[in-house]
Amino acid sequence: MSQPHALSDDQVTTELRKMTAFIRQEALEKAREIHLKADEEFSIEKSKLVRQETSRIDTEYAKKTKSAGMSQQITRSTLANKVRLRVLGAKQELLDGLFEDAGKGLREQGAKDAKAYEGVCKGLILEGLYALNEKKVTLRCRKKDEGVVKKAAEGARGEYKEKMGGREVEIVVDGKERLAEGSAGGLIILNTTGKIDINNTFDERLELLSVDALPSVRTTLFGENKNRKFKD
Image (tube, rainbow, N blue to C red):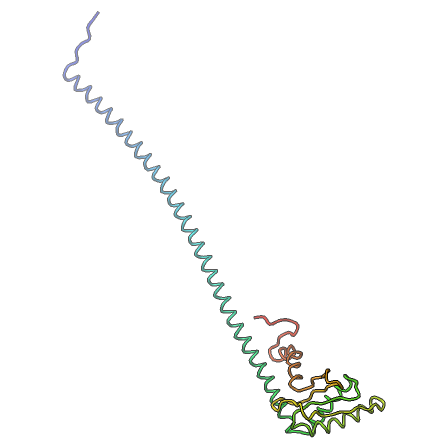
């Protein structure tokens, strides 16, 4: 059996070079694989982080947009309410002024035209006579109106008798209890017992008018439908 030949120094050197080159090549390919794998994982992780951050920013933006929208809505609503209250206040002030001026006009009416005032009082007395349907009534008025009211009472008594087929009624002007001198005028009609009264004072009539005629006044002044409430 033949013995293997021993390698020469040159052959050993050549073999070592081949092994070294092979190892180096293997190392380079492994390094490339690791580098490619690292780049791939880096790209995946970067995309994941970008998506997460983008989602966070979108969520935060949506929250801030919603908050800003609500803030603007609240601000608009607050301003609208303030404007509405100012408009309502201005309208009410105008209406109050109108009725106040009407009250002043009523207070001055008797002094300006006694004959007209007497006619008005006669109508108010007749209204009370028909409503109470009693044999005797008592009238209360301002002290300064007693003369005019007595004349009006005589006229009302005669017309009542005529309209009621000759029925008599006694009309007395109360000399003790009177309407306040600062009132607008008119009178109160009481029945025989004094327990039932009809308030036909101008102040009362104006108060009733301010309620009953208010829708029509609003429609005339502000163009508001009397069948609906005020809206902005």
